[in-house]
Image 1 (cartoon, helix red, strand yellow):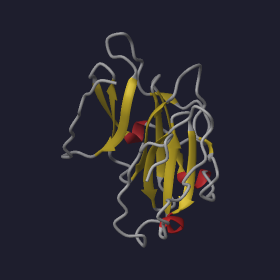
Image 2: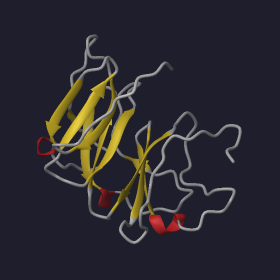
Image 3: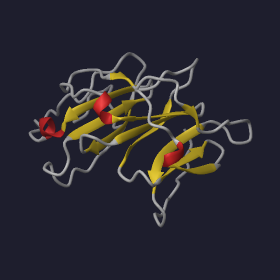
Image 4: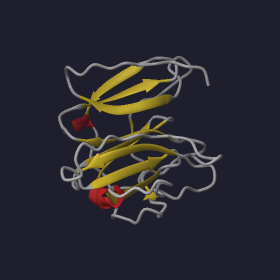
Length: 180
């Protein structure tokens, strides 16, 4: 059962605890954390703490990773950073994580993905329904907690980025709108 101040922000299917090594999480305020997936094998009925959050922050994305994948983080303001997950040391469940990207002003993270296929594309979607697909090789691998590179210079027509993920040719995508 969820507490009064809790709500689900990310869900993740783990088909096999033997095929993946880490659960990698990212927050809206640019924190990232890796936890050995084995720490989630025995869940109590009351649940387990997965990450400690700063006031005003929120868990946004959870991915299973194999230990040496690249991670890409994209902000609402159009910045993105790509780094190897090994730059984020494995932590205990109650840790808060480390900084993934330097955020400017009131910018926040809009998407995070673990790169399974380095030849895939980064797909971004903006608040006003625009999309952009860019080959992942165009995003250089950098060190964690940098400014990253510009992925989209948004304007009033496009609006800020609201989602980002990797996509391979032939994959289908469904976008669902809703009122906030």
